[in-house]
Image (cartoon, rainbow, N blue to C red; front, top):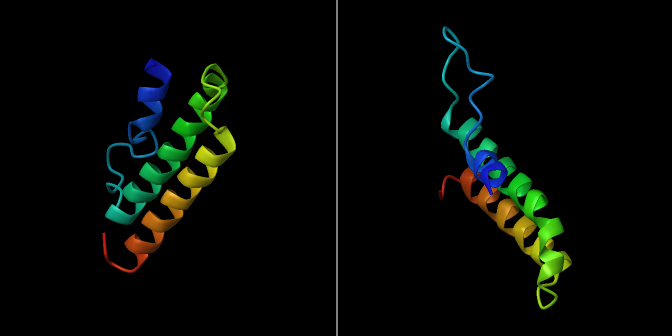
Length: 77
């Protein structure tokens, strides 16, 4: 569980003292990546829940990330 929570935290390791803070776009891109990575981390555990279709969930996560990225680019988010 801790690994999943760590994946959801924005990565700041690339932003050292003296380096500009990430822009909103960069932060959102990291968040989208973290969302995808979090799903990848839990996907193997989904086998415990046969009623859940991991392929369907993967498509829904990918669709959500794509939609959020598009809305961000369009200035709707």
